[in-house]
Amino acid sequence: MRLIPDPAWPVVVLAAIQLVDGVLCIGPVEFVGKCFRDVNFPERWWWTVPIVKFAATAGLVAGLWLPGLGLVTSLALIAYFVVAITMHISGPGLRPEPLHQYHRHARDLRGRHRDLFRRMTSE
Image 1: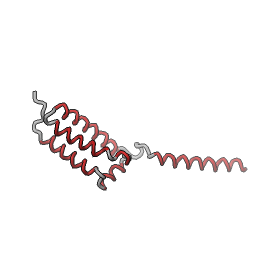
Image 2 (image 1 turned 45 degrees about the vertical axis):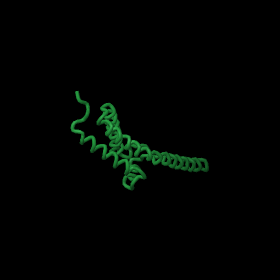
Image 3 (image 1 turned 60 degrees about the vertical axis):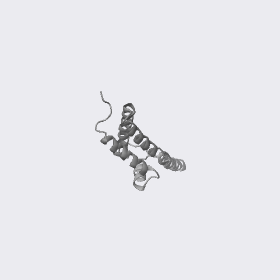
Image 4 (image 1 turned 90 degrees about the horizontal axis):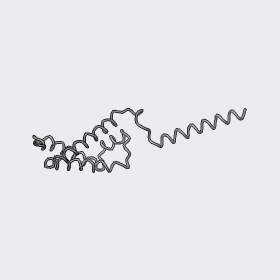
């Protein structure tokens, strides 16, 4: 039984796409940064994306000769895309707000309660 993909060109094309995407994620270019911000991907983790993309490229290419590695890389890419698609299609109400927004809401509530307490005790 042959485990190496035949034809191999779809794997090579996907590897090339991952390589170009990894290069675009270095920095990243403006539209990639906007995309990261739109899905609330923390900026402190942006540096990991090119590494993942380059690892996927290497795994896909090496998988042409090492079928087990190709399978693991393909499964990891499927998981990556499922997470990415989920982050893109979930509405803002389904994603947690950044922590600083929770702090702002808490400050607003404390102020409202303080004002209410003052009005109740001054009468």
